[in-house]
Image (cartoon, rainbow, N blue to C red; front, side):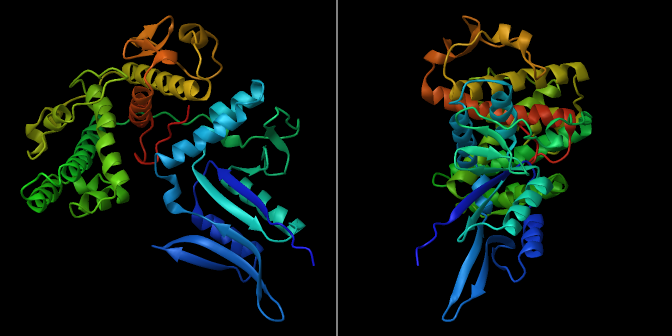
Length: 400
């Protein structure tokens, strides 16, 4: 008998809900078995009993660690670059500029026999419930199997986007108290990153860690931490993996924006890293919060926060766009015609009308500096959006 090659569908979604996926798999495939790691399922199989052995019909893969940067960002940049090959049009710009950057979740589906109607119904329901798309071959498909975009530029006129893409996110600025609390939380995370960075050179890293934990408890900072942040801070010195330590230190760029919002300092340039020490002093690391500059600081006017949000979106979008299409762009002219936004270039370094890094236009910028600026932009964009929306810091959207 000829072996039937497996059919692979990769589902990418705007909503991240592994529990819902598990429930949907169990609903459509009775008897599906799941493997779990640390409470989260990582794979599932649907099998049938043959005469001599079990036969795998369908399998699913989900890697909870897949969404950690820089891997996830590179995955999305690669996908956006793939669909940037086709001739630019409204559909392509929507996919590359607004759909792919908002993907937050992925499931790999392996069909070891020809997919049945039941299989396609499952994929469609999953797409609908997660605001997802199916990546198959050279195409991105909607929940009904219509081609949203193919690499050669083709798309079905009936193809649709999830309604959530057209629903503006509500903007309700956070309070000064919330910002001050988040400053302390970020300060604790950054300090934990510093302890990990300097682990080998510290005389007593465990003592410094106990001091950090004591400060967090005494100032009530643990009440402001999200679960993954609390876990990171509580991890023993020398035990964080390299990416965790790097991510912790990058949080200082978001802290810079929050301190700016409280009128405590100006933001460094879009290509300049924070010096770490100044933000930590402003939040009063090791001191009582009320004794630090951040203690009673008040927010700038909402109009200033809105403008900063537009500036950070502009920087982040321009850097992402340059990675996909590395060529000169008259940024000011583009802002006037852009169909999304709001965008704003006030105060940004420009050369020949385009964003500049290190005094050079983007197309002449050093690749390392471009990478640093992109990472800075992601963190500052997150902070600017959080200031206007609130909610979970870790889940704050940075789509461009």
